[in-house]
Length: 201
Ligand SMILES: Nc1nc2c(c(=O)[nH]1)N[C@H]1C(S)=C(S)[C@@H](COP(=O)(O)O)O[C@H]1N2
Ligand SMILES: [Mo]
Image (cartoon, rainbow, N blue to C red; front, side, top):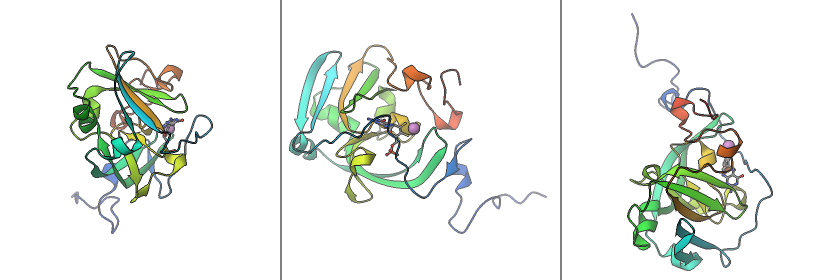
């Protein structure tokens, strides 16, 4: 007889079904950055939405903070194999940013750009319906600088390299254009549940 529901479950409830294949749980919050950590003061921070090369709207820190804010608690999964459960964020949902810019769905693909010249590509559908935000707070405090403060993209259903730190622009593109890691051997989409780590996975 198989007793269902009693494999690998601790007093904290079922966690095993929240860990994608090839991942392990961590309790700490590792920092992964390709280069030096940029120092971006909120007073200097700007965020731009563009269609191709054309800027559609630019917000400064106080303008951006006046947009509607949303809190989410999500599991995150880094391609280097750590996963962290129940991370708590607050920020502005991508659909609320686009609404403020008067945009609906100008193209199907987005490139996120950052102050450290990092970039990453995400289909627009993966940024809407509450799936993604520009996060300003983590665990109830302003986002620490090494985790992307003052603002980072959060796309928790994809591998964490898609969650661009120090984000300063979302650019609509007509084709799915590879970003920094996607040009260097990582998967164009990056679904942790399908283990899309590398280009041909
Ligand atoms: N701008 C920028 N964003 C970035 C990175 C980076 O190097 N620069 N690294 C990515 C990678 S590979 C991961 S796993 C996560 C790590 O986020 P953390 O340092 O907050 O854990 O940020 C992603 N976003
Ligand atoms: Mo990563």
